[in-house]
Length: 284
View 1 (tube, one colour):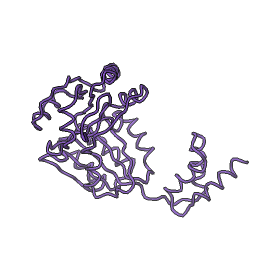
View 2 (view 1 turned 135 degrees about the vertical axis):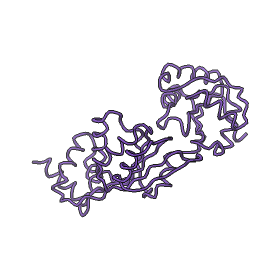
View 3 (view 1 turned 45 degrees about the vertical axis):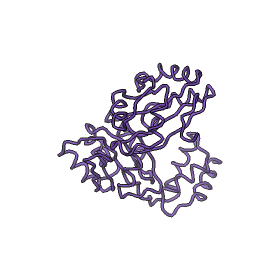
View 4 (view 1 turned 30 degrees about the vertical axis):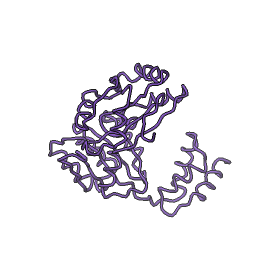
């Protein structure tokens, strides 16, 4: 029957990112039908089940970043036994900056099917509310915690034309926005979304300079998503961009693809022009 959780199939289920009323009918049925539930936080699962008035009959297994590797075989054993296995995380979709990836890979390698119950997404919710161009975007997860690694990661994204979406801890929001201001520039458009779908939901929009100043003078609370506008196309000559094309090709990218990628971030320089220049440089 449609909507039934299948035995011997690994199911990933998106959970509400804040408001339990966002839970799907399929999620409710999956929680009711599961034989084994791997939960990032068993207490949060119990609270969600209570909010949804669901009685769990499943065995509940703690499954988080610190024990994911050692407990994945237990999920495979359950699948082999024909059990209905469900993975849920604290909020949103498993695997996406959350546990689940190892289980999906292991299940695929062992020949078990994986299916997904879609649902709330903090990435898409923040992107939609940000007022920043959503047509092309890149989800970058959590920035590195160490200052040097964070700065290096942002340097690699400084000329990215796509809108960038990050998760961040409220404790590190101020330092992250300050680092973005330094690398991306103080005038780059951005938005900070906090407590999405909850009572105190807030979306702050402005330049990185304005948002960094806000975070420095505020006790930032709640789950944070940062959306940053893509870089404006660079005005540069083909000769200026040739080295980047050759560097990307040296790193393993096809020359034609490297030329296209660099051309997309530049004004007035075509991919064909860059490709021809790179070919000529290689012959020299």
